[in-house]
Length: 264
Length: 293
Image 1 (cartoon, one colour):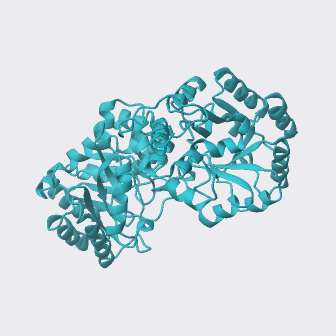
Image 2 (tube, rainbow over the protein chains, first blue to last red):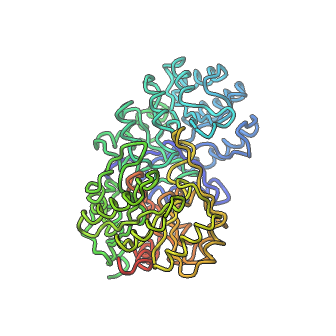
């Protein structure tokens, strides 16, 4: 295998089975077909809302805990939080990361990410050596209420230079999003979630450097294949492809994975 | 050739250039053999909003050949916004001809909102000998309810043309603020198709707006196929092939706007039987255009 591929952004896929165990088992078979060795998994369920209650968050995270349990060295979980419930989120971080097997934080569309309510969560994540993956999008059709943009993530990054932040989807409109996160070396560009538009990865490497780019698939919404093509099809050096496909995420997660005893 | 040899040859051709995934380098593909690959969704010319790698015809053709493509149905990005469609179509035809190997088949466009558009149609058929057309209703300002759409399809059917209907060209959410083009509404399509005997229709970039029951209804309304350029779901091709009648799923990359590897890898991600893989790669396209197999 020429590349070691780590996928920084996956979800359970309901059509594959009734239980998280069944779904992840089948997901891994598809991952094998395209050479993906390790996956980051999060957000077990939406429950029809972006503003999950503490109880709903626990249910969503429990699904991920069940899915990752059989594969401690291959599938890594991020804890799904809602900054509108700051204390409950901190408690959930303790349950799932400090005292559990999870290794990062996922934030979706519950609160604009430049709000001060995020600060305790980001500080705690940095203490735990856990990266924070924040959904971002810039839609000309209009963002959802409380849906963050890369520009808002840049504000958060400036307040927390010690935290590792991942700009999910690079803002969708990557030509805008990559510019917004460019000045902040603690922000990584997650390349997944949008169309496999030619030029995306080339611009990311040119503007923020290959060391700050992460391959992800966003399966559940997308495919391994379309998103892999963004790296494999890009006109960038082989060394950059290796970084984006696996080495960067491995480097990012290594400190916390080592505390969990994960074999690398 | 046994199943093992076929799969080896076809996957190798698909994945040539998709380096690093443990797949052997492709052997030269023949046009109709197991290594054949027909890409029904490529475009020549320049995308209006961004320079693209391979937005020169020679470069695109070289890339397609390196990926194992043996035939590509080529539309033109110029046909989206240019009002001088005759010139755009003539350039498309000349570029395909100049490429020289027969790799590129020109699919010109007709905008039935333009005065005397029938002359553009005539030139596509009679002067450029195009085997098909690619229509862009949302960029040209008409709906599928419009009687002129039905008339145009009828004219194409009588001439034996394949009609490619592009429902979108890019994600509506990330369009340039000054060039926002809503997707074509496919709701009337099944009814229109039923009224046109002999129509051979391929829906291009359609699987984001046309799915599940609505897709099945359109495909079963006549000789309607879909291509996979914008299909994006885990095991997407496998699920699509299982859901539609045999031979209705075609390989399309949407190069050069999309990385070609996206479509190629979809064939690898989905576990397809060899007959299914053969159908998607070239047999279904060959059925639509047997003279250009």
